Length: 288
Image (tube, rainbow, N blue to C red; front, top):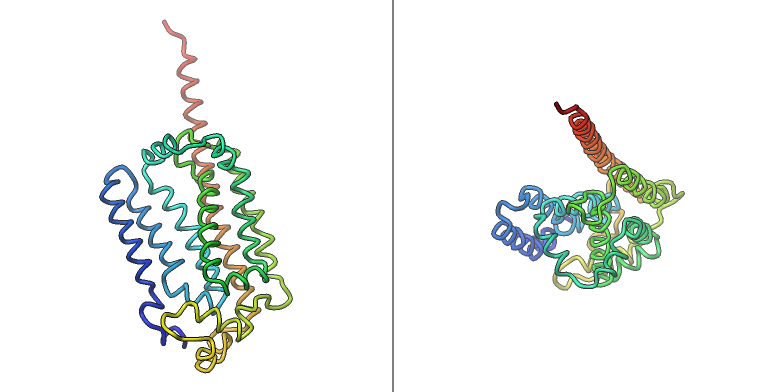
């Protein structure tokens, strides 16, 4: 098994763990009782699972693990981090950041809706995916771009800052529903493709080149091929089944997360309606 023969650094990415631990300590020191530390720390853990745990290496061997990376990073870590940041920090940044007109144009629910889902779908076009996987610098840049787009998308779902580009509750429900619809074509392409589409998981030469970037030291593609033979020698099932399972996992997890969010927003909406009805009833009582 490939993972059992990798070094500690290759499997656990200690430099990322150190960076995230430093962020956690700074958050605890400065936020104290202002934020929601449990949510923020859980978000950092989810980000580490997506970008630094053995899932990162396994995602270069099986697409199923790649999709689990995506789930932990963009559908679990990002909303937890946004909810964990103190509101006073958002207010401070909103007051200090320049060019408010430009920000209001880009910081728009429609832009957020199209940006994340467009980048996600574009990323999983086979030619684009295989190209990015063979170019570590471009791949890292695209991942950071997706992270920022995900934060923008989640901003309008969670509305962490009062009166900060907030959608009304009913529109927020439709916004979440629209996100689920727009991500469906990419998942459907992956699930119902008649054959495995990604050379990263089927072509031994491309796979060995991609895997070589994950390993520290001088382990080259030729050495990987001689040791392991190719990606199919270390997976549980064939490439098409792996691809289908990856698409199903992404769609199922996305539906669970978005469905939970719709229920949460709907509950908030009903609570506000009841409060408003109660206030109207009290105000309508004649005064003697």
